[in-house]
Image (cartoon, rainbow, N blue to C red; front, top):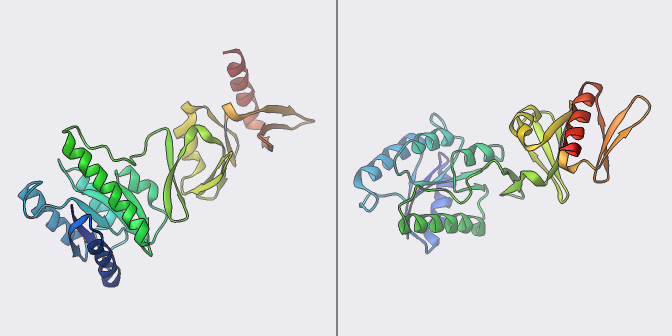
Length: 256
């Protein structure tokens, strides 16, 4: 069974989370901390006692926005330990999911916490701890992001979209909307960041508002003074400054 530490600066939220954890039969013990600094002191005691010692902590259920040291800061510190506890973020804010999984979080649960959603996070933590005990290879979280996926939030659940399934990306302020054949997802990542990250994967900028995957372009349409591309049933305009590069890339794809 898991030994858990819940961290939240809001007392009612902390008490509710502890109540739910105590009710889960897979949680052997659960204690609380009112801030990240206190949690860090408790985790240090756990590490000093060893993985099987009386002070050991298997998983930390961690709020993000707290006074002083916040949850992301604490997770970064834990990432430098030789054998840190697992981290499940429990927060009212949707905007930090990508950062959370970059820090190798096991899960990202939104408040108000639903019993079945927390149970899923516990299940993931139990499975990961069991895998660690079966072998001595370095821990790889089951939801660690990789270059082939991007984390998105949908209905309070964090999922991973396959990058190769993304047909095009649309800029929406500081956000970007990812389009696939099955729908779209909004992420808080600027279009320029995705352009740089996915250039080697065949994504090209065609307009200040659009990034497209070359593999999903069905047609290049030349009009009177206009150029556009057809992606599925959607036609997107290509700006003049990006037309030559796009045509060259499409030509290379055709002849390559």
